[in-house]
Image (cartoon, rainbow, N blue to C red):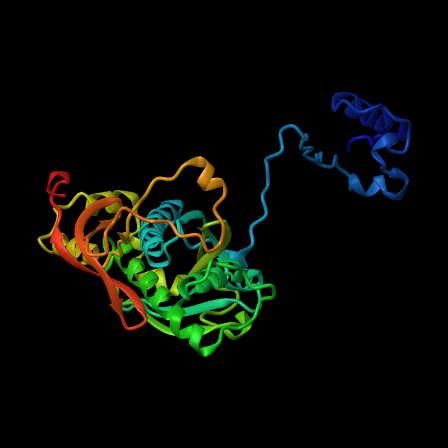
Length: 360
């Protein structure tokens, strides 16, 4: 039968262990390790035989692995490749909508994708202002509905431009009237058609506007904890800046996720142009608005006369009352015309087509 270790021998072993691990050596009773050996019955460790040695593993701080928390309720459902592809799709959408809005409201409009991220639907709804301009739409054959949120900071200036104003912003956010909703539907339908065009390399969609809401908490297209792809766009109309968000639920995108890869996107993009493409481009160009200007005439005055001009003064132009006037399309002289009146509006009747400056 082996001999039991004395208390002094145990103290020596503990002190040696403290020296080996870089800690200070302590006195009896466990020293600085905080062990009170007096509470243990060392006789029970023998049992008539030497007890097997028990060791504890000490993990140093410099060798410990970096541990990151993971929220299983917010599990990621989209790969980085898929997020990048969705961003490229909506960059195309932003370019198409920018050019159309610029022509429609006759003001320089810039739209760019700021971010594309994966969030819960609840997190998205909590960021939407109340009231706001929230469009619920479907994208058949994809299932479910998506949301397009237009902030009041850009929605009301856009509305004012459509009504012929200068694009002023409302002092206080409010809900849209029925007339304003009908006017905005044309802009929203343009946006949905451009979403269709932007997604055409992935899937053929048939966008459908369901309803326009103002209270975000009345909009429940998916459970609060469901993951969505949130496309955040920045919109500039003249000097006004606002945001536009597009929320696409996972349940809607689930069937097309295998097609959302950079390789497949560029492979589809490089395909030969279909015979219908030139026709589609021509139809879109035919709908483009152009500025037509009729120039009544011109004259020259001295600087002295210019400085003395006042309300009621008459300037005599070089154009005779029976002369034709110049008609410009954009900045190009294209027609000659005769001024007149239609109803209560001033009008001009084209009399000749100008093909070159020498024809004038």
